[in-house]
Image 1 (tube, rainbow, N blue to C red):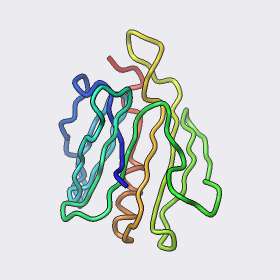
Image 2 (cartoon, helix red, strand yellow):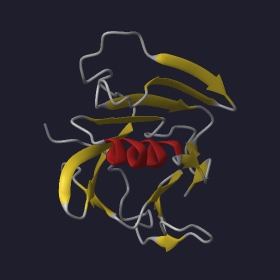
Image 3 (cartoon, rainbow, N blue to C red):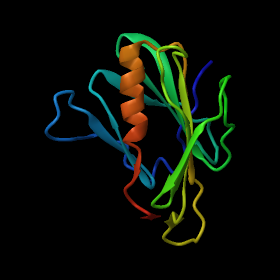
Image 4 (cartoon, rainbow, N blue to C red):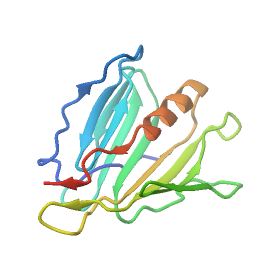
Length: 162
């Protein structure tokens, strides 16, 4: 199943990666509207958003292929997308609520939804990207750890975006 992730005002957001410093894996920081997130050098990021959509979708994949991490930025995530035997782990702090199914070698998948409050566009009180939904299946342990690090790096860098 193809993962969908991030779209919305791509022309207004900088997709040019900026290297982060002091890490062995050399992650690159990517920006999308309100958010920054880090992608390790061994992985690629691709915008797979449908044309004329009010959301954005990205795919993260190892350079040698393999499983895909889908990341959706928008307001109406279809969570959960994958099948789970348990309830998600819920948490809330600093304007962020999260429901997550963490990666485990038993399930070989991960999924989560993060919702952020207080985001807005400079000219409007409304923001189209308050939720981030991520998911991946059929993961090796290395991909599971890398994808977990990627989604945990998602952060609000610009609460008010032009």
